[in-house]
Image (cartoon, rainbow, N blue to C red):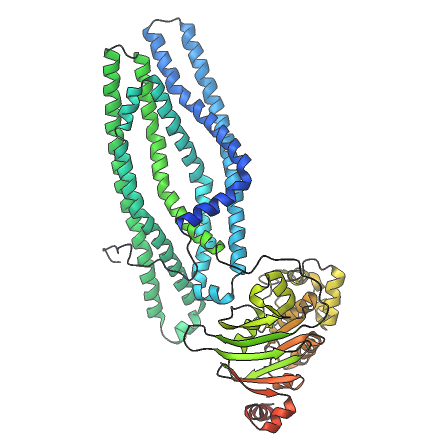
Length: 593
């Protein structure tokens, strides 16, 4: 571990996922709070009342001192004591109530923010999330949310209470004598410059600390996820070194923050000492000149002493508020990312629709195009098969047509409408992609299927199962109620693929894209999945990324891709007769089969 801490600029806080500016963060926070204006107003009134009850103690103690020095009857002391006990009891009750009110508002705001983050993430093209890295995204939805949650649950109530106490205390001291206020305000510049210096330096440190933690998380995920490959290639030491390096950067920024906090609190303690000396000096002068009573001077000194805790709480919590502010900016940055147009109700499928790909190009790294100026017109109800060697651009073309990744150059229209102009609801209703990378969610099979069509009843689900020839589901231990996923029944790869095709039947889209959707099937299950895939494309506009050329034979038209371009187009017989790339692929596949 190095002893030299890097400068805050040493590790850039860049990310593929944006970070909101201060203005954007404040606006977003106001938008989240606006619907809860009445609750906030009630919380403010209750919190002010609780603070006022707490601040009555110094004033009552001052009255008690005057009562003793002036020789008033003992009943006066009892009366003051009763007021103190009543104010203390009311303060405790009101503080508890205000804390509950504030926590309720804050937790609901956090819940809305968390939902907005997930919704915004899911609305983005998968390429953006992939470029950002899972480490950054996981860091935001876990570490950043937790940081904000901690502040909301513990820091925010204490900070707001401290701020109210400081404000009302200054008012109370001013009521006793304005010169006490001058004595207190005289040390305010020390607080101001200490806080200014701390905020100016801590903000960048916290932002880069969060970014460094995200990079550390990304490195851990990459190393652990590929542990087998790392070990096989004998690169263990190299990856451990990378983890150590990213960890050192993260720890270095944490240590910078500790240094800043230590210096900050040392300056606060100095300000408290000078302030108390000033108030006591002014009190002595005012008492000797007869301007105030001993009790009033005592109350003023107690008021200032009572400021120690709220000032320390308020200023020290700014440290955590800074940290949470950096996390909040990262979360708001996700919610502020432009998504598709707002969803509108989608109509039921009436007939197949056409798809047009017009001079579309796409590159993952802004250099070599994966798709190079492709133009395809797919008629309503037409079945297109796309074949080609690995790396030809088949899967990228499928994702472009499905709207999963944004079009680089050119445009793609579905039923005459550019896909960029379609809402998520419309796009998912019109075009559905089923790939070989399927996922089965934790829960029952029925619940898994309802994720794509929440309104589906048992009868509709059973009908989709029958349509896709997935009767094997009924043979599972609990049929459609069989729990699958982690800790449940383990489906085979072919069964998971079949579940994806049943989802397709429930969605019933006019355009489907099968990206090698039956490629994972073994010999026994291949026929069943091919049959289900054939049923899925019947009556729909279909693009089939063919893993087995037997799937291409049944297509109305076959597109042969190479180097991101369509190099051949025609029916099976036409392409065989042309004796080109497809004919060579067919011959090679026939020999292997």
